[in-house]
Length: 362
Image 1 (cartoon, rainbow, N blue to C red):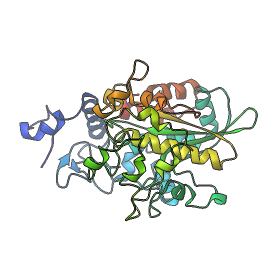
Image 2: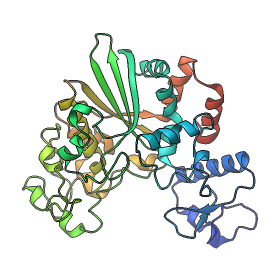
Image 3: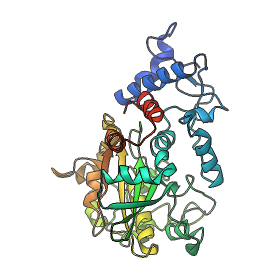
Image 4: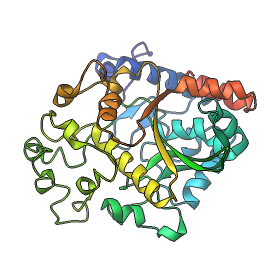
């Protein structure tokens, strides 16, 4: 089936129903991406998404055009980097709403120019003296001394996975040194049009089981991800809560398992940060979430977690921060703030800046 935008020539009601099911933010970004596509590549057809079979959408690129997902000035470099480092290119990379493409488009300049990275990050923290590296889809196991599966084994995740696939992967990891020579790492979780932070991979198939879990009553005994039987069901997440500075008792009021929904991703990122702290010669690790202004649904709290809300904790990130004990809290950065930091340095590629403005409106 062909899907069109409302207002397109010859668009029928049936062809535009899909659009009305999107959030207001998604609708705005879909229109932006369609306009960008039609301006940049006139005549390039709508095509089917990886997930939608033969359903065609106007904001998806045809197969074989992966390079068009990225800024032309470094598109080939990005694809080479992903291939050379065995990083999974997401199946929806041809969707112009791709969060992975968005992240790489806005953050890859920092990898290309570590001096620029230092100047940009100093806008958020003046303690940054030098940026020593920027990695994408980072899994915490790049150090040769740790072995290639160290973090995977610590978390109990599938050994068949790789960066960006079936493993806890941080969208961006920035390694920096302060003015006293101490090492630090920033983990960055990137969100574009996502409606939430996702759900536990086991929840949909095991709702009844997950809904009875209580964090104060040996939850690991009832967790589908821990009870063995396959490589996907031997996770060590419950074992690592204390090591990672997660106070599960602070989540006891949740209805069922608190990690069945959006806290699942934040929990895994917190645990990976703990692994890097423990294996990185005492370096500090902080986690930030980059969001787009206007994507209000991302921070919405599902009913099963509303008992955890308070006047001081209204959003998902706020609720998660209440459960952290002795480790840095998550921070939130708007994409517009990031671009303002680029602007303040004055050292960015003007053509790239125009591309980002046209493509993402920031």
